[in-house]
Amino acid sequence: MLQAEEQREVRLKRNEETLRELSDTIRRCNIRVIGIPEGEEKEKGAESLFKEIRAENFPNLEEREVRLKRNEETLRELSDTIRRCNIRVIGIPEGEEKEKGAESLFKEIMAENFPNLVREMDLQVTEATRSPNFIKARRPTPRHIVVKLAKVNDKEKILRTARQKKLTYKGTPIRLS
Image (cartoon, rainbow, N blue to C red; front, side):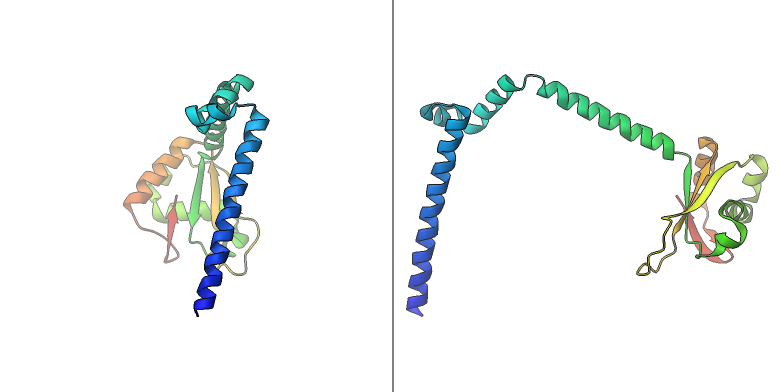
């Protein structure tokens, strides 16, 4: 047992020496590549030197990062506006929409759960489909039905009233989101 411990210690010392050698080599390579005098690296710190060199070599980098963030926000907003009319119907058994069609199924759910709301507003469904298009054999839960409405206000009214009431379709509980 003592031999095994001694061997481990010898390997550990060898690994530590190799690690020191590698870190020295990397430091020397960085100094050569970047062109920093050896003493200056220790005085200013590696991070501040890196930032200075980056600012000198890439002056528009900050502007580029700001533009990138702005573009990401714009993309997110566009994506939200495309999807903002969508309502997800969760919990409808598979195959129900094949008989009647997803749009008429949604209208039937609305008539069953919100008869007054359907009467007072003109419900216009642009399209309705199951999402995703393929069925996963390992997934026991039914796929969602995505319904795209013509008006955002209709979606907001439906979701507002759906939060106050438990929804069902032929006795099975469903959710809208």
